[in-house]
Image (cartoon, rainbow, N blue to C red; front, top):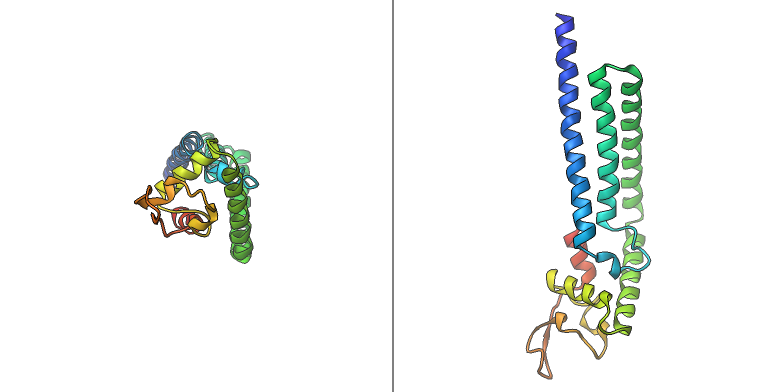
Length: 189
């Protein structure tokens, strides 16, 4: 009876780790897709490596490796692999808890840093016409229905057409009201 219970537990753990492995692969694929498709890093020159796609890539790799270790340990009933798996899970839980606490404690400072970096990216885009950074700003402003970091006046005298809702050729065009920082925070909660 106890042997059947242990076998059942073994297969349940194998199945759970297989599901986690598949989820890790899905997160990894989503990270690769976002890296290829979305080029939001151009908007924030200093924080370019802290993009959602990079976070998804790292998370996908970690989830895939840890769940594969758990699957293999459960399948082979190897104590060393299972102990390593549970220690890694414990360590990852501590890292997640620490990261969540730090994000909550420094939320204001992080928002200020992102705001400053977006402003710096907008200034770089304003300085050069026809560059790829400008097309990224256009893409974000149209897709997220935003304009500028604070409002359309951030662009100065040359407000791009992506900020314009209608009447772009007239002396008093109507501009988008929301700002990029608000849009990005609602788009990536």
